[in-house]
Length: 323
Ligand code: ASN
Ligand code: ZN
Ligand code: CA
Image (tube, rainbow, N blue to C red; front, side, top):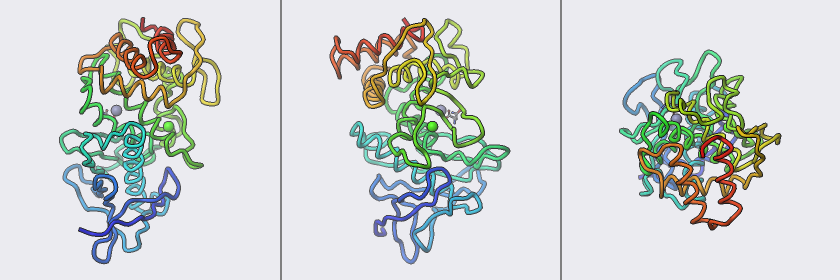
């Protein structure tokens, strides 16, 4: 029910953006009929259920500050839309399960909650308001990161521990970053940092993951014992080298682990290789050695086994010590 409309969101992280809304009676609701019916709910501090579907009399949501409780909803609704469009326009993927059905988003989870998470059981994303130095967790890269956990669950199914867990996390950082780039604007121009809009320092750095103090830049036999958010570093570093290359650039400085030099092939090709590897070759138990094989197979399919793209995949894995 209701008529599809284009509303406006005054977001915290992405400026003023269009939102897919639905007119119902005398109000407008955050229901995006153009993208699988994606809805955004306000939990109002609860940690269960769906709370209230976000509605406005004016078809304008939020004021760009946290003083207005619809601002976080506008960010989340926009993040879901950009992520939907990225997967649809880039890979022809129709939603997280590729079945045309949208997940839903929940904002204002709990109190002072400085995290966000995807859940397969509700098929939904949830965002905390942050607090103590943390902004609401509704930036585009985090939205793309969380929804990508759903894509991974429904494709390779990478187990969330050990090396496969690190690859699962890296897959979310990679596509969260590509989602952010896909909607680059003055408020959020695109970078290889995760969560740079949330606090004074980013959560993670893809160019040199060890800048966070915990993540690994290079593969080792003990990598599998690290938390998945840190063992992801090696694959994030691989992806940065593949897309951008080694050495100083506008986006960072990415020394290789073996002193080699890599010339990047760009985000579009690097993303296509990772997506094909994830959806065609990786399985629930793929480890780093398996990720090398999977991405090489994907690169061979897409560009040929004697292509510069194939050789750069091999060189970038070797550069992070995945032989
Ligand atoms: N935000 C975190 C993540 O998506 C939540 C978690 O630890 N799973 O990785
Ligand atoms: Zn994650
Ligand atoms: Ca970012």
